[in-house]
Image (cartoon, rainbow, N blue to C red; front, side, top):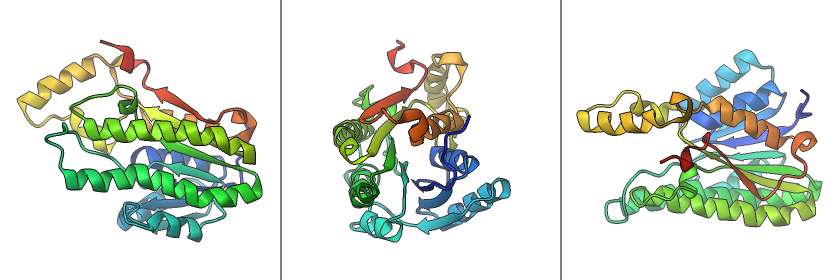
Length: 255
């Protein structure tokens, strides 16, 4: 199937590992040139080597901490040619309102929520000028399945869901689409501990989580990447904007 993405320029934040890296690989397979962004330069260099070993596409890398003030604007100024923006950076730790570390929460909120909003804002005028562009926000199921014991993630993801829906309803006036993906529990380096708990308490808790998963497994990064490629294609998804699709095989509705 031809998604007509060959030659498109995609900027992927959080592009060195996990879901962001899987999306980058999938876009490279469709012929997209890549700009990969993450904090860790070593991981970025490894990601570039892995992608270019399989695909003959341009891969530029940028080590950026998007939680820092002005970082998103500087990144957009460096890559105004971006046609596909994948906002996949940032993660927020578990904790209730009274146990979450306020400093870590602020930093994580800046890195996940504000970086998505500000990078989208900075690139939007360039996309308006071309009357084309796609922004895909990788959010998370906690924005729908709210959890007081993971208050930071719930609040951050709910904010990004609202942003995607509100912003995506306007952008179509200028030929730009904005969509979101809410991954459920996905097997990445960040969730590897679920398969290898360190103590009996974690083992019991994780066993219950794993036993209730559809198909008896976590999702894979490729399953998120496949949907992202579909969304990136104007050929396939031209009439989709302001929508957020959950990819958790219905886990959020299971008791």
